[in-house]
Length: 211
Length: 347
Image (cartoon, rainbow over all chains, first blue to last red; front, side, top):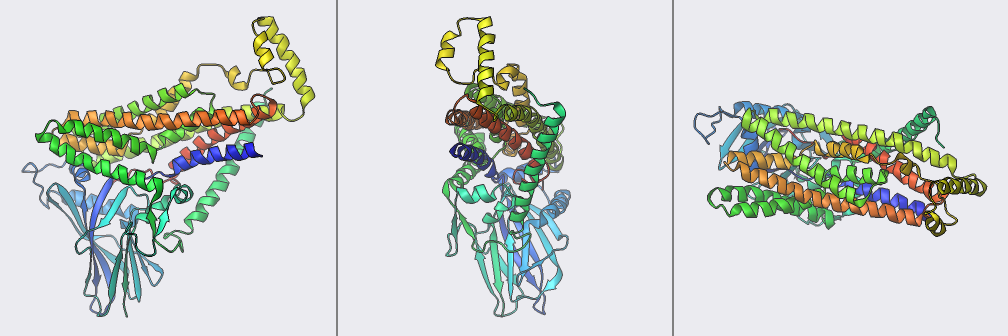
């Protein structure tokens, strides 16, 4: 029996080695705005995602410009379109819940790319399918496969635009060691790593409570 | 004593199907508790422990690479720093993620392979990975000047092909290992009498060839003497080894491609290429280490399972079959998207 247990352990080790798969190749610094209508409903989310310089260079590969090293918004329009379309497959890495119910987003609008200091910033607005009226809204930004590492900007990471009075926003970053945090260890990885969702451990969680 | 091919096939398929269904069910169970399904474990976990540390180190090295490449533009000595960082990144990179070590380790366990061969396979496949990365960037970015969309598309295609290769490679291993496992199963239980008979037969056989085997016989007296199916399979394993190298090596690391494109844009192609190979060297060291550990672990299992008597042989054949199944499952999981964590994301 002990032999079989050891064999099982060996196989488990092999599995465990394969489980801790993902690691980021792209870093995004995000600023997000929650857009509210005059009637107090949430109508959409406006993101500004700044890519790390290595990925920015990669993304700019093959794009012709009039002036070397200078990319205008027009010259980047095709790339912005590609980005906006590609993001759909990943649900825009943006997951909303209104009072516990999953909300869906429309295709992005008003998207464009900026280039400065060697970094690209993708701006886009995600309209919600139906305007949301909720006591508690939870918005999470993360890549479930953790190919992309999302980090909310240090300064003014989240803005509420036109939110009803009395709404309170709270941002929970991954790794911030806040009260509810529990330590993730190898076991968690071995148990949950093989499935695709361990990226949620790196989620940025925005919570808005309204009266 | 071999089972007829049809029985082998059926048995192997049945086992794989059962395994796959079980794992599929388990994965769906886990998926059901995610934000994409329903409720999920409440508190936000914090990344800690050894894996968390690996991830942090890896990110750190990777992000330092771009700064160092920039610095190397004006200061040639920064290239050495770049190589050092790339090496470290390679080591940490392979320790956490990557299917390379999983496939190579499982392959080594499935076959009667030596640690040395594991080391050679690890280095050869890492070298191939680096070569493929350089080839993609050389053709895509430098020669054709395609857009990132096209290049990323090519990466994805290669990725899918490599997953299919892993699955095929695994299927082949399962086929052969399933045969030997079933052979061992049939040979095993019914008993000592039968063992003794074989024993005798084997003695006769060997005596006929050479008398120098006397000592060996004494050392092993009372144990199973017949050649194991793997010994019968004989060498020629290098061809199989090449399949392992191809399977692992065909898919380059996305990180290496990003570094190469970045270096190219900074006018430091050679630094980028050097960094890619040094990264591969680091990766190879880690993969080789894990491969060697796997081989030794199997050795320990062999010793624990009673060496070469019938029961022990059965256990070992079982381990080999299991490892073969693991390669197949892993390839299928990657191919069908159950293990999505390794996929290249094209934006």
